[in-house]
Image (cartoon, rainbow, N blue to C red; front, top):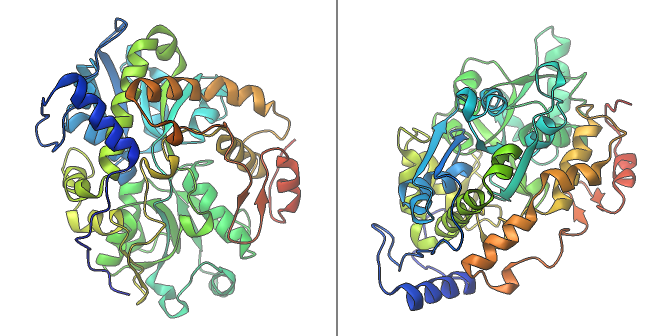
Length: 439
């Protein structure tokens, strides 16, 4: 299939048309520089407790809503004139700076792997297991990650089914050579995707391979020197691997679970408690940026913003193709207009379904990162603040049809036939053969 960009641009969503129409009616034709539609200048109905926030990010294209909110002035438009969006070198650094908080020269919140606010809140990933209560305000994106394999296995053309890859790894290990799979943080989304994929193919990620941690921007360089046989990471690093002829994409994570949740916007709970109005202002700015990112007319600009040194610091060519849904897998397989492209706002991407958080917690229990005995409902209600999202959506004039009626997206189905019913996570766990649960 052709991977050439199309010039056909679908009409704006009803949400965005309503959004622009309402703002134009109220605020006239005020224009935001570079944004070819009336700006949505929202009057502050209540006073902001602060105009400051420090938000961290990792160099990944799913952090684009934070880049856009900064570059296009959305934070300032909602009264948050002193928001700093700060690059973090790794997810471990993000964790450490969230533990410190801005008062300790750290950060107040971040573009973050969805499970991390739960791992922080429970103290599972902190020094001495001291809890650092966190809040999830929105999901930043759906889909858009990839599992890539070294060119050492190019003849196999590894895909969704990892069975042949299992045999190749076993042969290599049997010859006395190390085999490893890299992800970005223990218990994080990339760790869970690659574990799920390997386990579905009969590969035990705890005994058949060494599962190692590598920060996203360092994945390609490490694959180049032979540090791993496969890795899971977000874009643009999977496509950059192909462009540098080091490896290829075996599977996109959307092929494992279509429209799966990915990153989140997380804030320290103490910041949210002290600054409820400022928190909502930050969220509204990010939601508006998500709409901007998913408008086809803005994709080129968003890719250029992402490519800047202060953000991802990668060539636009490594970013734009998959952002537009054009997938070159590096094996001769080409997909145009893939349904597995990253979504920032479409398909209710922004809303933080509590049922999705339950899946992430359940998978962390599967692999022993969280105890099997855990009051998951109480934990989710503490961390997931979808109520703030709903309030922000209402103030932004989001169409009622774009606001989920339930906190659950219902039963989820995976590529291997497994089913996750949020009403019965135990049945899901019982259906999984490979796991490493702790009491």
